[in-house]
Image (cartoon, rainbow, N blue to C red; front, side):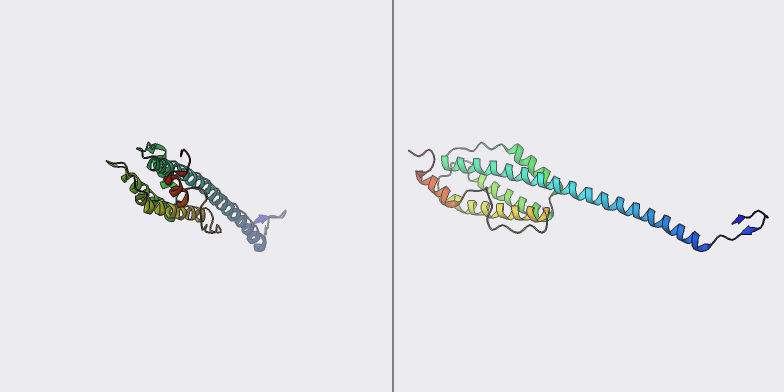
Length: 184
């Protein structure tokens, strides 16, 4: 309420007071909402970038381990796997992978473990021992790649075949028959 020159009170129009309070409230709500939306967007972007990096590291580490195990098998020697990068990649993955990608990674780790068991106490020589492991590696790799792609963005279509990863079985069999690199 305000006083005029004669000392009598002037009435404050309620409409003006209500519209001013409404404008202030709308501004405050808008600022808070945009802050929340911006923070959510930043968090989502950070997560997606971190997931992408973790998925890449896991696939690179998996590829290095798989190649060393396969080459050792085909060259009939003990594998010399650098487990540190592989284990570090799994640990990073455990921080940001969605449940589907994490499950696919765990299944792929089990197959890698099955592959390493072939070497315990002996030197495997039978290509047929490798066939089911190779099939499981190929299947597990594809499952992980598709799970990772979908976790990064739901619009990513499933792949029917991966790029990289375990070589085609025909290539493994070709090298084993002595027709591959290093054959005399």
